[in-house]
Image (cartoon, rainbow, N blue to C red; front, side, top):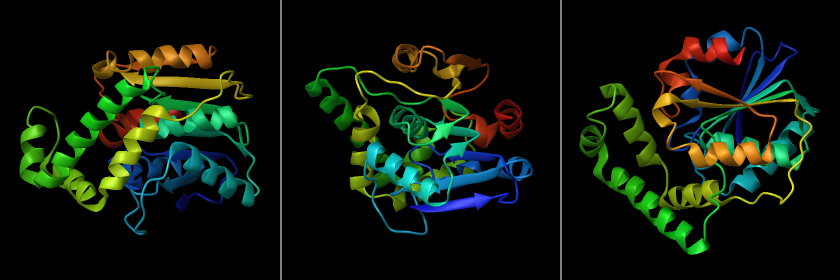
Length: 247
């Protein structure tokens, strides 16, 4: 797993974990402000790394790989960890593992394990896999039609087409299978004193199950709703708002 670091001269450490179907440069608009205050650690998640040909493995394996990397660097205490969507799933797993101590964890629209019968999860997985795979096959023209009603620029659509062309079908399948169904202990404990769950008003209905799950496993979580925001929209589309909120 490639790890990108910025602001290494700073004492405070912040880990940023990107969503699925984007690359680590999801954070490119917030790095310049944050690296002035924090030592930023931004992993390129396997399967989504433009510099290394690889496939996504699982939420469990990638969380463990990050723990091994941090421990090897002598980092056992992290001031803040932020993860969006798939990145939020990594945080949920990392908090339950308890290997690294986090002073603050921000789960932004984080995906939690489905509390559904196994056969139902298979139908959901197949639906999600086909949806992304069709976008991969269809290229830019199909994406332009799919995002016609969204506030995405031509540059945004070209970026998404580039990511879909790069990632493998194995990565697509494993991403949705693992992110929706990763393992969690029956009893979850964590030493993290400050856990926040962020979500946009445009995704409130879609995040209901995730919010209910977080309330159950991390009852001290503070929930923050952002007006005029959708899923995974803060860092790339409202960077100043993101920086203000994360600091």
